[in-house]
Length: 75
Image (tube, rainbow, N blue to C red):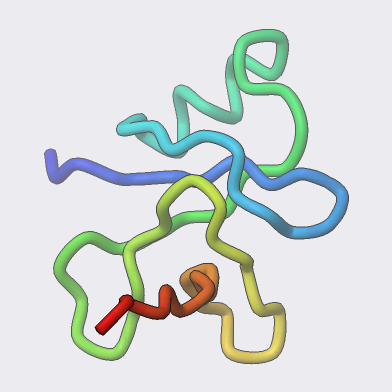
């Protein structure tokens, strides 16, 4: 059986947790896996593996990495 990966989303579609769990187990244990969970793909071309702080885009059904501010280096 292949491993499946799921990302827990908050109300703003921001990833708060990532878990390795079979869909059937996740769905059978709503008290353990509360809130909204979306499958993320570790090695699928064209898909971004979710990380904490990533945003889930409903339209593309993919995850977008957070943008970090550029740090200016002193010369």
